[in-house]
Image: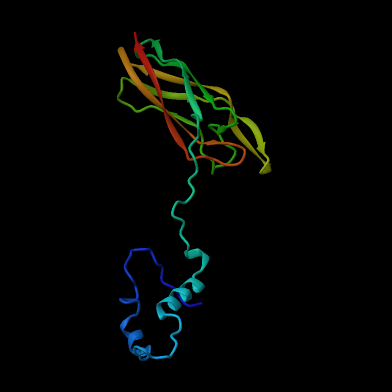
Length: 204
């Protein structure tokens, strides 16, 4: 099939004014003189346009507004509590962080069933007066999906708790830990996301 150039609607003729390029004007033949009874066929510019339309392949049709996946109407995961904790300064302390997965969704557990899946992880940037020395994650629930009933997945649904081991300096520290996860429903997965986990940690 001949290669057909794309036309992007620039408003500028690619064939030259008045619709024919110089080579076509030289080979198109003499024009009919005024008063001549010789009938004129369809204009060459019209025939060229028809040929372009006939030869154009479906892959060259570019939609003006391609469909975009709508964002989730509600957050897929929400941090619930605590918003403030008091722990002994300089001593490792366990703090239970509570989260909730939105209904109809699930997220991979911290130990997903495949290395290709994105695990749920908690992190804390150092230097805020509080250190995250370890985190204990709950075991995931085993589920299968209708689209692949032979594959078991380890996921979190509903409410789940991460036990964070924190060490705080003396004083009041407003920190933002981060929860990284990927949410899915029964048919598709959404892009990975990181949400803030704000906590006021008081080291006494």
